[in-house]
Image (cartoon, rainbow, N blue to C red; front, top):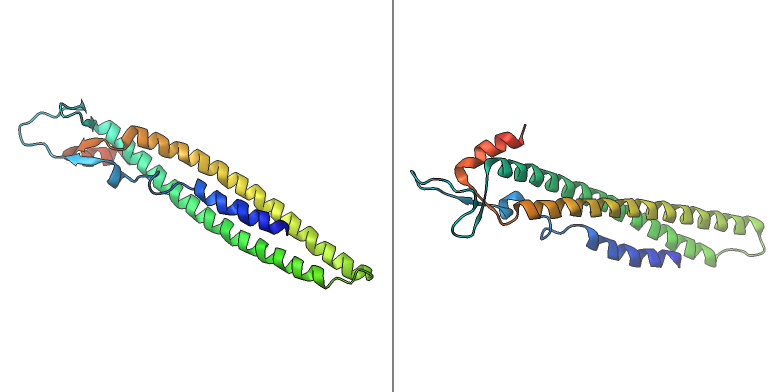
Length: 172
């Protein structure tokens, strides 16, 4: 029943994938501020206590938001691949267990066939564990990108008329 501990471990790993609450997109993280005609823009901490981003800072936030979104998509796709791989390994483990009940312990060919199935199963489990560890390392790295984005951009405001200039800067 070695495949059951893998199931328990895998149920814990999806919690490492950044949730929407952690990886906030640009639309939810920044607020546009309209400035009345003739009113000077104030960057930094405005008198209301609100932090207003400069055009360059806004461009950086747009770039970072793209990185967060791309990272989220890549991790979700990889998680789906890992889930599929786990299902295959789990099915193989169940087949090995069923096969164990039919092994003729006095027939060398029967024992060898079963041992080959067990060896194949163990190799696949090890390969899966390696991929899972690599995936978790990428999740940790991505969480660092998300944390950096949130620190620099989340909850900050920008002037609405700065957005097109910032978007042009971000695309360079």
